Length: 309
Ligand code: AMP
Image (cartoon, rainbow, N blue to C red; front, top):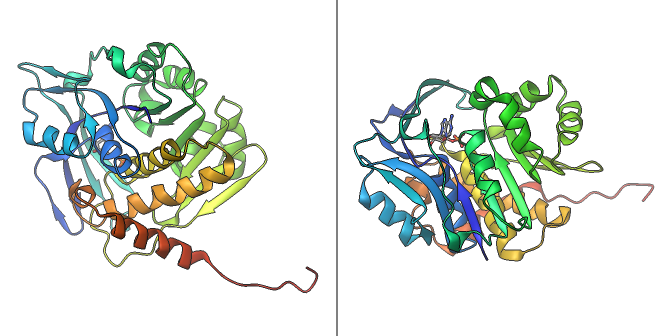
């Protein structure tokens, strides 16, 4: 199934209450590609890096079924760098640094062979770049999913709204939904955001799960209560990767199937947070994924007989 993703391929430096990393491999497209690789291959990646980015990290992506030909390498330049510090609740974080570096003037080129994509995952990066990728796809994909963050709402809101209008599913967190809509209630926020164009909205609430809205319905998926949450970085991207990977593998974009996709996305996010960076997303087995999804099923299954039913 043809799945194309654009997003950052980057270095991150992360501080959590459990420890601190130097520069490690990160980036939205990195997490998306790894998470979606367990459902759908190949994953065609479009991004940009400097010549400081290690070849073995690209190898790991390729071993997971990613095509990395669409990742431009800029000699003598530095890769995107992000640094963040998590609060004690691990649900909120402060961005300490965002160095755009190669991203500052990135002009994406979607390779010819990627252009017939059916599933397009616009991972977090400059809205104008996300738009430039949409513009290079001649036939509208079956599904366009957009992930973004407050940084772009603060710095490029008009461009972001243009991209939002072109997408089918928008995924953002609860604070971002409030910022984008100006509404405190998430139900009102969803109503207002759905008027901006997308038919579906996923609001991620970290350890409190995720909500899927369309105009008529809402579905809630919990997050798995985990013994260890080590590093939430990339959880949103892993969620998005699992979500679109599952939809691409089933080719079914109904609301009912999106409910299942949300559970697969949540399962991938739950793996991601168990170790620093991308470590836990590398080399997962099908049994591990199946067991994790079963944990989600068990978590929310209950029997009730209502007197009047
Ligand atoms: P998440 O925790 O899912 O929101 O994603 C974290 C990843 O997003 C990190 O690996 C960062 O490299 C990347 N990231 C952070 N800020 C930005 C930004 N402004 N644009 C694109 N990617 C970003």
